[in-house]
Amino acid sequence: MEKFNLCIIKPNKDAFSETFIQAHIDRLKGNKKVLYGGDFPLYDNHGRFLIRSKLSLLVYLLQKRLFKKKEIGVRTRALVAYFRNNNIDVVLAEYGMVGAMIASACKMAGVPLVIHFHGADAHHKPTISKYLPLYHKAFDYASAIVAVSNDMVESLKKMGAPASKIHLNPYGVDGAKFPLIDISDSNPYFLSVGRFVEKKSPLSVIRAFKEVLKHFPEARLWMVGDGPLFDDARQLISELNLIDSVTLTGVMTAAGIRQLMEKVRCFVQHSVTASDGDMEGTPNTILEAASSGLAIVSTAHAGIKEAVLDGITGFLVPEHDVADMAAKMISIAGDVELAAKMGLAAHEHIARNYDINKRIASLDEIINNSI
View 1: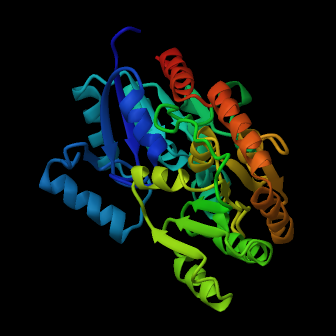
View 2 (view 1 turned 135 degrees about the horizontal axis):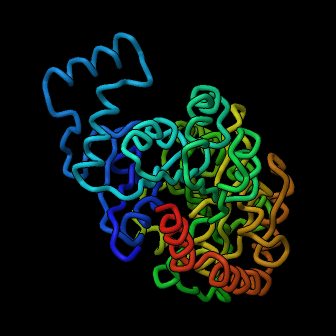
């Protein structure tokens, strides 16, 4: 279809870590409308409430807050009306929870639905338990279901998603924004970027870096991001006497992160399966660092197993194996030629398999085939 109206529905108005959703908004074909408001959209991209009448709003609030209902008729009808008034041809639901909640509205409006899973929505046990009955209904109606890693594909199948509807389409990187950096003269500096949450295991990175310092006192580590474990990380840095060697930057802009990439040799991330089952999809930060030509040290976890070729573009270690991670970081710190060789291979691997234009074209095709 040459011209069509695409409605992208996302949970959050803005989230610094959800660059992949912004890439969809910016790059996908079609006349795009954007809605947001949690697991069910309440606002359009101008911040206007979808439920227009005061009476309907009162009914919604009573059912939502007093009766704790998931399926609220007045809210669903407001979304159906939005689809019809805006001649929406197809809906892209960002996250499985959103797809689960809006499937009935799509069905009522006769609008095809594509559900894009991203990570926790396919692995986090409490989330799956909460939404599974609605997931099943959404799987039945959806025209397509998108996963970003092979592990996620298998998880979706176990939840009952038809294999014929599942499409593997990892995130992509804009190579123009993350061009190759020459790290052949770099210092033994390391960078980690991500939310300070259990599945990122930032404390494991700090403990591994402590071992690196024993061999390379001049080594440095920058950790970018924020989250529930930020204070724990700061305390551990103090306890291990790493204050002069580890910098917690907080949240940074993409430009700021790029500047840090230009001064380091290696990107590190110790992703693990959290106690509640939460897992990564395919971390964009690893793709961006690899595109930039940094050697990668990470874990054999989720989509990282495809994004990083162990022993070629970096090193992969078992989850929670801090000693092995430290050993691999020490190898990178002590051999700049090895790091540069891996960084170049990483750049080429990303360009071949994770180019943003190719990945968006694949998603465009999935969406177009659903209309």
